[in-house]
Length: 420
Ligand code: UD1
Image 1 (cartoon, rainbow, N blue to C red):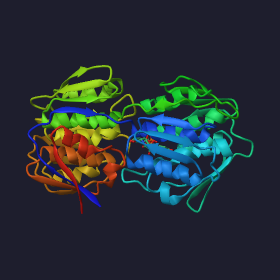
Image 2 (cartoon, helix red, strand yellow):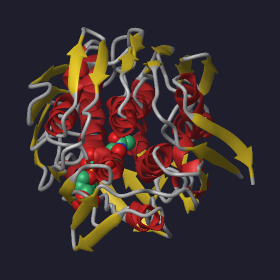
Image 3 (cartoon, helix red, strand yellow):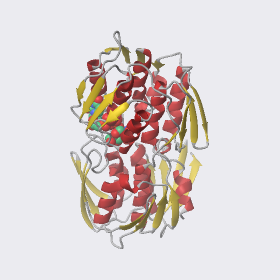
Image 4 (cartoon, helix red, strand yellow):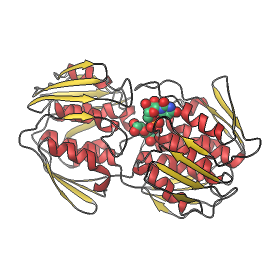
């Protein structure tokens, strides 16, 4: 198993190129199941979750050629509609194949994803919406068994809660359904927007893209050819490196980034004293000399993302004063707290709220990554710790960060990947 050995640094300097967004790539790869042509996707990140989904598609019978940052997916050869537990258990987002397999083949079996480190993460809203569209769903021996005896029919869906993968799943199912589907309380994340835009360019008329009400005119059969497209930049990766700059008080420039997707993150960094020079596809951060404390509430896009909560907590340990961080999306997304405390952070937890008192002198030690974003919070803390930090179980980190240690090393961090 790999681990990261990291030393504290005085400062970082230079440019970091941001990769394509993992959370945009996953639904867009799942969408290729709906295609009747070979689909060419550019700017994919090299992260384990992408390999997992491509493996799932290969198991279904698709052909996937992933070279450099480009994949060509041919799903015309799919001859199997069962997404098995061995893959689904390693990545919950595998549930994204449910909508498209069902829409194309009229039947499928998808393993239930099971538990998750950051909370229960049910998929009831995905299933309820598919049933409204005419699917018959049974849960048998840990699998979702779904059929569409009369095909999928457009209907009116109102999500009780905003769900990102739920919205993506239903948009994909609705794309081939007969008639019009309206999704109220749809997710507005840029990753959902890109999925809708690509489907819209493939013959599925979608109105309200980027709003909470999506109207999808199903084709009742097939898509026209899906054109080549480029995955949007990863806003969470970008946010993480902005925090790396802020915590080490370094000026860094991120390239190949979309500043418009980072509104809430930039606003909080500004409150903490940083300023920015923004271009069309770059951000230079001018860090605060003294980091100010902050109040953060995680919510759905365009509000502050839960996927940035752990990194801001690491940053808040270095603020002069008391920061309050409230997690509203996932009930157990504070697993990084105990590891940050072991490094010397002063954090107290009360239900969904963390109180972080700074500024703490952090010390390097052995710590354990517990989930994807918690892992990067530990890397950020390690950058300003005295001595050496060894971050173990970085397979979590590898699920979603493309070459993190190489990118940080490139701007002067002392970080290396070693084997246990
Ligand atoms: C996606 C992102 C993840 C991010 C999360 C919230 C991907 C691959 N993953 O996860 O990085 O942290 O959005 O921004 O894009 N819920 C239900 N029932 C459902 C579905 C969701 O109760 O059927 C609840 C969840 O438990 C959670 C909330 O709704 O409390 C939001 O979850 P959701 O948006 O579905 O998260 P994911 O799509 O799994």
